[in-house]
Image (cartoon, rainbow over all chains, first blue to last red; front, side, top):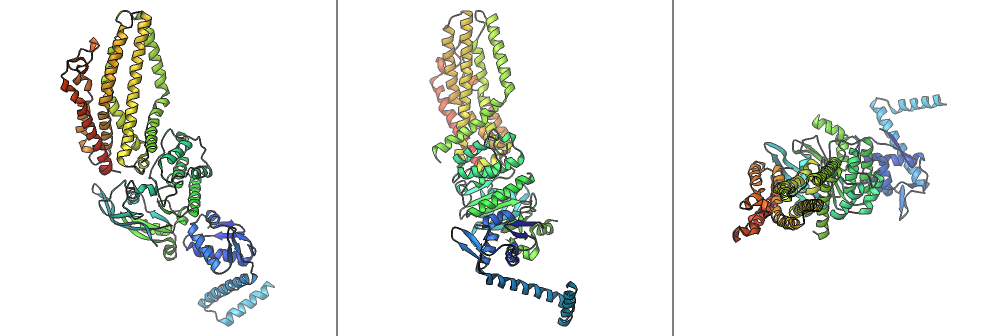
Length: 130
Length: 231
Length: 246
C-alpha cells in the first residue's frame, strides 16, 4: 500500500477493502487532523480519481457522502470546498475519537480487561508519558 | 440499474471446444465493468460477439437494446484483441482514418489524447514500440463519443509506462462523459481499482459477478478472488 | 454510408498497396537497371524486326492470375497484419467493405495494365526512332494494346471477385471448398488463350473477338464473365457475413 498525497491529504488504499469507505474515511480524517484547512478547495472528482488511480464513480460516491455530512459544500462553477464551520469539524473529530475509543475498548474487553483495569493502564501510561 | 449489455445462455463452439458455454452476463450502464479470467476462458469470444464479429450458436445477446450488428457498431467503440495498427500510417493519418470512418469521432479529443499519451503526429506505425501502438489504438477508441466503449485486452504485452498512461487516459475519459465501459483483461494488478463491476469467466461460464466494492467487502481484492478461482 | 466514406475506404486500401511498392527500394533499382540494359541492347543490336513488342504483350497472359492474387492479398493482409478486427467492426455493411476492396483492387489492376502498355509503347517508339524503321508498327501496336486493355477491363472484375472469395474462404468454415475455387482460378485465368485460340498473335491480331474470326455470339462471353463475377462476389459477401472463423 503506497501512500499517495493529494492536495495536502494523505491516502493509502487497500484493494481488499471497499475503496469508497477508505476514501471517505481518509478525507474525513484529513479534515479532522487539519491536513486540509477549513474553506479550502478539495481536488475535483476527476483529479482525485486520477491521483488515486481509481474509478471516478467511487470518488463521486465518497464526495456525495461528505456533502451529506455537510463537511464539504459545492459552489457552482467553482468546485467543492471544505466547510468553513469549525463546529462541524470538531463534531467530526469527536466522532472519530469516539470511534477510536469504542474500537479500543472492544479490543481490551476481548482481552479480558475490565473498565477498572483499563482505567489504571491508561493512568499508568499517562504518568509514564509525563 | 439498467443493463447496457445483456447476454443469456450464450454458447459458442469451435469444433469440439466450447469457447462459451451457457454464459450469462449483465453489464450495467455508465459503469466500468471488467471481464476477468485467464487466456482461453472465453472472454474474447464474448467481446467479439458484441460487435457482431462472432455469432453465438445459441443464446440471446443485446447491446444497447439491439442485437449486435454492423449498424449497431455506430454506437460502439471497439478495441479488438491482439489488434495491430495499419502499417504505413502515422499518428496523423490514423486520426484522419478515425475522423473519416468512425461515427462520433472527435478529432480535437483525439489530438488531445495523443498529446497526453505522448504520441507525435509524424510517428510511423513501423517505428512504434508495442506500447506506443497500443496508446495510438486506445486514442482512436477514446476519441469517440459513443455510449459504449469495449476494450479487449488493452493492457497486454505493453510496458509499464504505457499501461499507466492508458489507465490515466481511461479515468480521464470516464470522468468527463457518461459512457458504459467494458474492459476485458487478465492483468488485474494495476487495473482493478478502475472497476465498478466485475465478471469472472471460467471455462466459458460466468463463475462470479457483481459490484466490485461488494466483492471486496465479501472476499477481498479482485486479485484474491482471481487466485482463489483459478489458482 | 456516405459517398466520401466509401471513397476514403478505397483510398485507404490503395495507400496500403502502393506503400508496399514504394518501400521495395531494391525493386526499383533492379527495374531501372533492367530498363537501361534493354534500351542499350535495342540501340546496339536492334535492326530490322529485332523488336517484337507483341511478344512483350504476352506478359498480359499472366495478368488475370496476377490480379486475382492482388485481391486475395488484400484480404489476407487484414489477418496477417492484425487489422481484421478494425476492418470488420467498422459500422459499414460487409457489402460496402468488400466493394471498397473490389474497387481498389480494380483501380490497382488497371493502373498496372496501363503502365505496362505505356512502357511497351514507349519501348517501341524508342526502337523505331533509334533504328529508323518507321512508325507503321507503332500504330498497330497501339491498336493491339487497346484490345488487350479492353479485354482486361472486361475480364478482371471476375478474377478480382474470385481473389476476394479465396481470401475469405481461407479464413472461413468453408475452407474445404478452396481447392474447387483454385481449379476455377487455374482455368479462368487463362482467358487470352481460350478466347484467342484461333488468333495469330505474331500477326499483330491477337485474338478472335476483334478480327472477326470469332462468331458474333462470342461477345456473349462478356456478360457471362460479369454474371459469374457477380456470383463470386456475392459468395464472398456471404462468407464474410456468416462463415468467417474469428
